[in-house]
Length: 216
Image 1 (cartoon, rainbow, N blue to C red):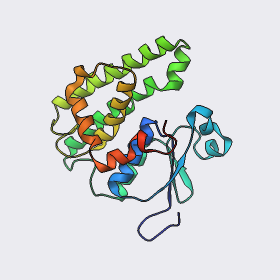
Image 2 (image 1 turned 30 degrees about the vertical axis):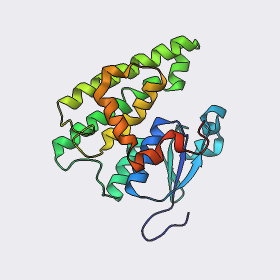
Image 3 (image 1 turned 30 degrees about the horizontal axis):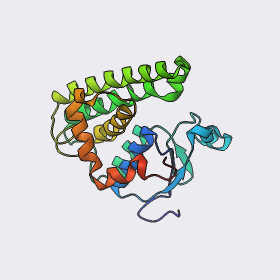
Image 4 (image 1 turned 90 degrees about the vertical axis):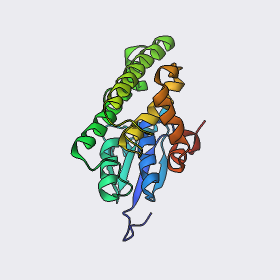
């Protein structure tokens, strides 16, 4: 993709089922930012290829390549997109509202998703049932915290009020994982409602795992 006056050349290196990748795909779609898609297969170890690790030393996905330079960490990418393409805004104008949205996002991005990541769970145990139970424990704990914090914020149609925020970009992929791990979502009816509403939105649906190249 060539650089234009309106947009830098953007390439997203991502895995179809990665929740962090979904966050960034959704932000790109929501902002209407054109990008080239490079699917990377975690299951076959493509993310560990020397050429990719040289650009993104963590080897994690996604990697957002901007004018030839690769950046890591999904929330850093989302912040850059929100600063560079302000509409629609992913953070509220009020400083305390912004802090609450960031708190919600970090409950998932720091306190939940990393603990159920396959590489972390695999280090803990090789037993399939224990892996599932370990991941489910941390997902349920994170969703419970998210649900309680949301209620002291500004609950609405979405995680914070009636507009999509960074909190939703983190929550929805995590709900997808919760369903994969057979977590009883009747405990989190409000959050499941947000998930269902978001999937009806064109940008979220376009970014969802089942609509990506290589999905199975």
